[in-house]
Amino acid sequence: MNVAAVKGPSREVRLFSTLLEGKERSDEARYIRNLEAQRQAEIRAKVEQILALEDGHHEREALEDLLEKKPEDVSLIAKLGLDDWKFALPIGLFIAIPALSNEVLVLDAETQLVACFILFCSTMYTQVGGMLAKSLDDYSKEIYEDLKAVDNTMLEQINTVIAADELALSVEEDFKQYCHLTDQLAIAQAEVLNHKEVHLYNEAIVKKLESLSALEESAVQAIRHRMVAQVKRDVIDTFTSDKKVKDAALARAIEILASGAKGPLGKDVVGDVFSQSLANYKSAYAKLAPGADPILAQLEKDIAAVATAPVVESKGGNVYLM
Image (cartoon, rainbow, N blue to C red; front, side, top):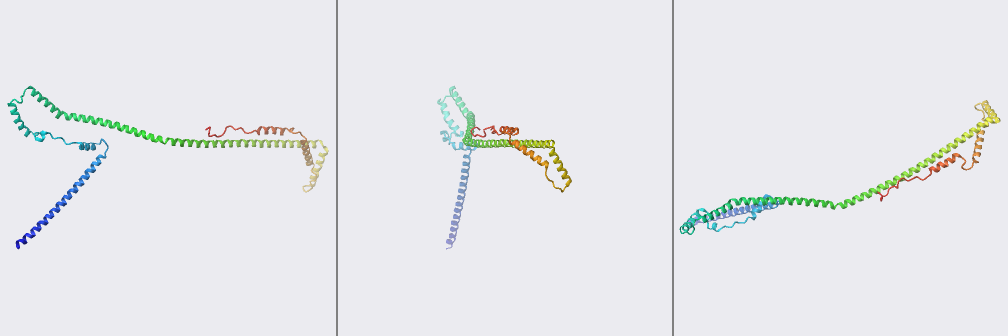
Protein backbone atom coordinates (compact mmCIF):
# COMPACT_ATOMS: atom_id res chain seq x y z
CA MET A 1 0.00 0.00 0.00
CA ASN A 2 2.76 2.33 0.83
CA VAL A 3 4.64 1.56 -2.37
CA ALA A 4 1.55 2.10 -4.47
CA ALA A 5 0.90 5.33 -2.72
CA VAL A 6 4.40 6.49 -3.42
CA LYS A 7 4.36 5.47 -7.06
CA GLY A 8 0.99 7.04 -7.83
CA PRO A 9 1.88 10.74 -7.26
CA SER A 10 5.21 10.43 -9.04
CA ARG A 11 3.45 9.18 -12.19
CA GLU A 12 0.99 12.08 -12.07
CA VAL A 13 3.82 14.50 -11.57
CA ARG A 14 5.65 13.09 -14.56
CA LEU A 15 2.47 13.25 -16.64
CA PHE A 16 1.85 16.85 -15.60
CA SER A 17 5.44 17.79 -16.37
CA THR A 18 5.11 16.07 -19.74
CA LEU A 19 1.99 18.07 -20.49
CA LEU A 20 3.76 21.27 -19.46
CA GLU A 21 6.71 20.41 -21.70
CA GLY A 22 4.36 19.66 -24.60
CA LYS A 23 2.55 22.92 -24.08
CA GLU A 24 5.84 24.83 -23.93
CA ARG A 25 7.00 23.09 -27.11
CA SER A 26 3.67 23.89 -28.75
CA ASP A 27 3.96 27.57 -27.73
CA GLU A 28 7.56 27.61 -28.90
CA ALA A 29 6.59 26.03 -32.23
CA ARG A 30 3.73 28.52 -32.59
CA TYR A 31 6.12 31.38 -31.79
CA ILE A 32 8.64 30.06 -34.32
CA ARG A 33 5.90 29.71 -36.94
CA ASN A 34 4.78 33.29 -36.25
CA LEU A 35 8.36 34.51 -36.60
CA GLU A 36 8.74 32.58 -39.86
CA ALA A 37 5.45 33.96 -41.19
CA GLN A 38 6.45 37.49 -40.22
CA ARG A 39 9.85 37.00 -41.79
CA GLN A 40 8.29 35.63 -44.97
CA ALA A 41 5.87 38.58 -45.08
CA GLU A 42 8.80 41.01 -44.71
CA ILE A 43 10.75 39.19 -47.43
CA ARG A 44 7.68 39.19 -49.71
CA ALA A 45 7.12 42.94 -49.10
CA LYS A 46 10.80 43.62 -49.76
CA VAL A 47 10.68 41.59 -53.00
CA GLU A 48 7.53 43.42 -54.13
CA GLN A 49 9.18 46.76 -53.28
CA ILE A 50 12.27 45.83 -55.31
CA LEU A 51 10.15 44.58 -58.24
CA ALA A 52 8.26 47.90 -58.19
CA LEU A 53 11.51 49.75 -58.94
CA GLU A 54 12.21 50.94 -62.46
CA ASP A 55 14.11 48.82 -64.97
CA GLY A 56 17.87 49.08 -64.63
CA HIS A 57 17.90 49.65 -60.85
CA HIS A 58 20.82 47.79 -59.25
CA GLU A 59 18.66 46.16 -56.54
CA ARG A 60 16.16 44.90 -59.10
CA GLU A 61 18.92 43.57 -61.37
CA ALA A 62 20.54 41.75 -58.44
CA LEU A 63 17.20 40.16 -57.50
CA GLU A 64 16.52 39.12 -61.12
CA ASP A 65 20.00 37.60 -61.40
CA LEU A 66 19.43 35.71 -58.14
CA LEU A 67 16.03 34.41 -59.29
CA GLU A 68 17.34 33.45 -62.74
CA LYS A 69 20.39 31.62 -61.35
CA LYS A 70 20.06 27.86 -61.93
CA PRO A 71 21.63 25.17 -59.79
CA GLU A 72 24.89 24.04 -61.24
CA ASP A 73 25.10 20.54 -62.59
CA VAL A 74 27.27 18.33 -60.40
CA SER A 75 29.85 16.47 -62.47
CA LEU A 76 30.68 12.79 -62.17
CA ILE A 77 34.04 13.57 -60.58
CA ALA A 78 32.33 15.69 -57.92
CA LYS A 79 29.77 12.96 -57.32
CA LEU A 80 32.61 10.44 -56.81
CA GLY A 81 34.47 12.86 -54.53
CA LEU A 82 37.48 13.08 -56.83
CA ASP A 83 37.42 16.88 -56.81
CA ASP A 84 39.23 16.71 -53.45
CA TRP A 85 43.00 16.29 -53.90
CA LYS A 86 43.30 14.10 -50.81
CA PHE A 87 41.31 11.42 -52.63
CA ALA A 88 42.27 12.26 -56.21
CA LEU A 89 46.07 12.03 -55.57
CA PRO A 90 46.23 8.47 -54.22
CA ILE A 91 43.75 7.20 -56.77
CA GLY A 92 45.78 8.87 -59.53
CA LEU A 93 48.98 7.20 -58.22
CA PHE A 94 47.28 3.80 -58.13
CA ILE A 95 46.20 4.25 -61.75
CA ALA A 96 49.31 6.05 -63.12
CA ILE A 97 52.02 3.68 -61.75
CA PRO A 98 50.64 0.52 -63.45
CA ALA A 99 49.86 2.52 -66.61
CA LEU A 100 53.44 3.79 -66.78
CA SER A 101 55.07 0.46 -65.87
CA ASN A 102 53.00 -1.44 -68.44
CA GLU A 103 53.62 1.30 -71.01
CA VAL A 104 49.92 1.91 -71.35
CA LEU A 105 50.72 5.59 -71.02
CA VAL A 106 54.00 6.75 -72.57
CA LEU A 107 55.35 10.16 -71.50
CA ASP A 108 56.82 11.26 -74.80
CA ALA A 109 56.87 14.68 -76.53
CA GLU A 110 53.35 14.32 -77.86
CA THR A 111 51.99 13.58 -74.40
CA GLN A 112 53.84 16.54 -72.94
CA LEU A 113 52.51 18.74 -75.76
CA VAL A 114 48.98 17.53 -75.05
CA ALA A 115 49.53 18.22 -71.33
CA CYS A 116 50.83 21.70 -72.10
CA PHE A 117 47.84 22.37 -74.36
CA ILE A 118 45.42 21.15 -71.69
CA LEU A 119 47.23 23.27 -69.07
CA PHE A 120 47.04 26.28 -71.36
CA CYS A 121 43.34 25.77 -71.99
CA SER A 122 42.67 25.25 -68.27
CA THR A 123 44.65 28.34 -67.36
CA MET A 124 42.81 30.43 -69.95
CA TYR A 125 39.49 29.06 -68.75
CA THR A 126 40.13 29.56 -65.06
CA GLN A 127 42.18 32.78 -65.09
CA VAL A 128 41.38 34.69 -68.28
CA GLY A 129 37.80 33.51 -68.67
CA GLY A 130 36.55 35.60 -65.76
CA MET A 131 38.20 38.73 -67.13
CA LEU A 132 36.74 38.12 -70.59
CA ALA A 133 33.33 37.44 -69.10
CA LYS A 134 33.55 40.61 -66.99
CA SER A 135 34.66 42.59 -70.06
CA LEU A 136 31.79 41.21 -72.10
CA ASP A 137 29.36 41.87 -69.26
CA ASP A 138 30.63 45.45 -68.93
CA TYR A 139 30.36 45.91 -72.69
CA SER A 140 26.81 44.51 -72.74
CA LYS A 141 25.91 46.71 -69.76
CA GLU A 142 27.33 49.75 -71.56
CA ILE A 143 25.31 48.88 -74.65
CA TYR A 144 22.24 48.45 -72.42
CA GLU A 145 22.79 51.87 -70.82
CA ASP A 146 23.25 53.49 -74.25
CA LEU A 147 20.09 51.86 -75.58
CA LYS A 148 18.25 52.86 -72.41
CA ALA A 149 19.42 56.47 -72.85
CA VAL A 150 18.23 56.37 -76.47
CA ASP A 151 14.87 54.97 -75.33
CA ASN A 152 14.53 57.69 -72.68
CA THR A 153 15.38 60.37 -75.25
CA MET A 154 12.84 58.98 -77.69
CA LEU A 155 10.28 58.74 -74.88
CA GLU A 156 10.86 62.39 -73.96
CA GLN A 157 10.52 63.41 -77.61
CA ILE A 158 7.31 61.40 -77.91
CA ASN A 159 5.92 63.00 -74.73
CA THR A 160 6.88 66.43 -76.09
CA VAL A 161 5.12 65.71 -79.39
CA ILE A 162 2.07 64.42 -77.49
CA ALA A 163 1.98 67.59 -75.38
CA ALA A 164 2.29 69.73 -78.52
CA ASP A 165 -0.51 67.75 -80.18
CA GLU A 166 -2.68 68.20 -77.07
CA LEU A 167 -2.10 71.94 -77.30
CA ALA A 168 -2.92 71.82 -81.00
CA LEU A 169 -6.28 70.24 -80.19
CA SER A 170 -7.37 73.47 -78.54
CA VAL A 171 -6.19 75.68 -81.42
CA GLU A 172 -9.55 75.41 -83.18
CA GLU A 173 -11.44 76.63 -80.12
CA ASP A 174 -8.90 79.41 -79.54
CA PHE A 175 -9.18 80.45 -83.19
CA LYS A 176 -12.98 80.51 -82.92
CA GLN A 177 -12.75 82.71 -79.84
CA TYR A 178 -10.26 84.96 -81.62
CA CYS A 179 -12.54 85.30 -84.66
CA HIS A 180 -15.56 85.98 -82.42
CA LEU A 181 -13.62 88.64 -80.52
CA THR A 182 -12.46 90.18 -83.82
CA ASP A 183 -16.06 90.31 -85.06
CA GLN A 184 -17.23 91.93 -81.84
CA LEU A 185 -14.45 94.52 -82.07
CA ALA A 186 -15.35 95.22 -85.70
CA ILE A 187 -19.03 95.69 -84.76
CA ALA A 188 -18.11 98.00 -81.89
CA GLN A 189 -15.73 99.98 -84.09
CA ALA A 190 -18.39 100.27 -86.82
CA GLU A 191 -20.92 101.55 -84.27
CA VAL A 192 -18.41 104.05 -82.94
CA LEU A 193 -17.64 105.32 -86.44
CA ASN A 194 -21.36 105.56 -87.26
CA HIS A 195 -22.05 107.55 -84.09
CA LYS A 196 -19.03 109.71 -84.86
CA GLU A 197 -20.35 110.51 -88.35
CA VAL A 198 -23.81 111.28 -86.94
CA HIS A 199 -22.22 113.59 -84.40
CA LEU A 200 -20.09 115.29 -87.06
CA TYR A 201 -23.15 115.68 -89.34
CA ASN A 202 -25.21 117.16 -86.51
CA GLU A 203 -22.31 119.46 -85.62
CA ALA A 204 -22.06 120.64 -89.25
CA ILE A 205 -25.83 121.35 -89.32
CA VAL A 206 -25.60 123.23 -86.01
CA LYS A 207 -22.73 125.30 -87.38
CA LYS A 208 -24.78 126.13 -90.49
CA LEU A 209 -27.79 127.10 -88.35
CA GLU A 210 -25.55 129.27 -86.21
CA SER A 211 -24.16 130.85 -89.40
CA LEU A 212 -27.71 131.51 -90.66
CA SER A 213 -28.66 133.03 -87.31
CA ALA A 214 -25.55 135.21 -87.41
CA LEU A 215 -26.32 136.30 -90.99
CA GLU A 216 -29.92 137.10 -90.03
CA GLU A 217 -28.80 139.07 -86.99
CA SER A 218 -26.25 140.95 -89.08
CA ALA A 219 -28.86 141.76 -91.73
CA VAL A 220 -31.33 142.96 -89.06
CA GLN A 221 -28.66 145.15 -87.51
CA ALA A 222 -27.71 146.57 -90.92
CA ILE A 223 -31.35 147.31 -91.76
CA ARG A 224 -31.90 148.88 -88.33
CA HIS A 225 -28.79 151.04 -88.64
CA ARG A 226 -29.79 152.07 -92.17
CA MET A 227 -33.29 152.96 -91.03
CA VAL A 228 -32.07 154.96 -88.02
CA ALA A 229 -29.52 156.78 -90.14
CA GLN A 230 -32.12 157.55 -92.82
CA VAL A 231 -34.74 158.79 -90.29
CA LYS A 232 -32.11 160.80 -88.45
CA ARG A 233 -30.99 162.36 -91.70
CA ASP A 234 -34.57 163.18 -92.74
CA VAL A 235 -35.32 164.78 -89.35
CA ILE A 236 -32.17 166.88 -89.54
CA ASP A 237 -33.03 167.90 -93.07
CA THR A 238 -36.59 168.78 -91.99
CA PHE A 239 -35.44 170.96 -89.11
CA THR A 240 -32.80 172.53 -91.31
CA SER A 241 -34.97 173.25 -94.33
CA ASP A 242 -38.49 173.79 -92.82
CA LYS A 243 -38.49 177.06 -90.83
CA LYS A 244 -42.10 176.57 -89.68
CA VAL A 245 -41.33 173.24 -87.98
CA LYS A 246 -38.17 174.64 -86.46
CA ASP A 247 -40.05 177.69 -85.04
CA ALA A 248 -42.82 175.46 -83.66
CA ALA A 249 -40.28 173.22 -81.95
CA LEU A 250 -38.48 176.24 -80.53
CA ALA A 251 -41.74 177.81 -79.27
CA ARG A 252 -42.78 174.50 -77.72
CA ALA A 253 -39.45 174.20 -75.96
CA ILE A 254 -39.77 177.74 -74.56
CA GLU A 255 -43.30 176.99 -73.28
CA ILE A 256 -42.04 173.84 -71.48
CA LEU A 257 -39.16 175.71 -69.93
CA ALA A 258 -41.52 178.53 -68.89
CA SER A 259 -44.10 176.22 -67.32
CA GLY A 260 -41.49 174.55 -65.14
CA ALA A 261 -41.10 170.97 -64.11
CA LYS A 262 -44.78 170.56 -63.26
CA GLY A 263 -46.14 172.15 -66.39
CA PRO A 264 -47.93 170.18 -69.15
CA LEU A 265 -45.79 168.75 -71.94
CA GLY A 266 -48.25 169.48 -74.67
CA LYS A 267 -47.62 168.53 -78.27
CA ASP A 268 -44.29 166.85 -79.10
CA VAL A 269 -43.12 168.58 -82.30
CA VAL A 270 -39.84 166.64 -82.57
CA GLY A 271 -41.61 163.31 -81.95
CA ASP A 272 -44.12 164.10 -84.66
CA VAL A 273 -41.29 164.83 -87.10
CA PHE A 274 -39.65 161.47 -86.21
CA SER A 275 -42.96 159.65 -86.57
CA GLN A 276 -43.54 161.25 -89.95
CA SER A 277 -40.02 160.34 -91.06
CA LEU A 278 -40.56 156.68 -89.99
CA ALA A 279 -43.88 156.60 -91.87
CA ASN A 280 -42.24 158.06 -94.95
CA TYR A 281 -39.40 155.49 -94.71
CA LYS A 282 -41.90 152.64 -94.30
CA SER A 283 -44.01 153.73 -97.28
CA ALA A 284 -40.89 154.25 -99.43
CA TYR A 285 -39.47 150.84 -98.41
CA ALA A 286 -42.78 149.16 -99.18
CA LYS A 287 -42.65 150.47 -102.69
CA LEU A 288 -39.27 148.80 -103.39
CA ALA A 289 -39.31 145.94 -105.88
CA PRO A 290 -38.44 142.41 -104.58
CA GLY A 291 -34.67 142.00 -104.50
CA ALA A 292 -34.03 145.76 -104.71
CA ASP A 293 -32.79 145.92 -101.09
CA PRO A 294 -29.02 145.28 -101.28
CA ILE A 295 -28.89 144.04 -97.68
CA LEU A 296 -31.60 141.45 -98.27
CA ALA A 297 -30.07 140.51 -101.63
CA GLN A 298 -26.70 139.89 -99.95
CA LEU A 299 -28.49 138.00 -97.16
CA GLU A 300 -30.15 135.70 -99.67
CA LYS A 301 -26.80 135.04 -101.33
CA ASP A 302 -25.16 134.28 -97.99
CA ILE A 303 -28.06 132.03 -96.98
CA ALA A 304 -27.85 130.15 -100.27
CA ALA A 305 -24.13 129.64 -99.72
CA VAL A 306 -24.58 128.43 -96.16
CA ALA A 307 -27.75 126.37 -96.68
CA THR A 308 -25.98 123.66 -98.72
CA ALA A 309 -26.06 120.08 -97.39
CA PRO A 310 -23.08 119.08 -95.25
CA VAL A 311 -20.47 116.99 -97.04
CA VAL A 312 -19.89 113.54 -95.48
CA GLU A 313 -16.15 113.03 -95.18
CA SER A 314 -16.26 109.25 -94.62
CA LYS A 315 -18.71 106.38 -95.00
CA GLY A 316 -18.85 105.59 -91.31
CA GLY A 317 -18.48 102.06 -89.98
CA ASN A 318 -18.91 98.90 -92.02
CA VAL A 319 -18.14 95.49 -90.51
CA TYR A 320 -17.43 94.04 -93.96
CA LEU A 321 -14.72 96.62 -94.67
CA MET A 322 -12.89 96.38 -91.35
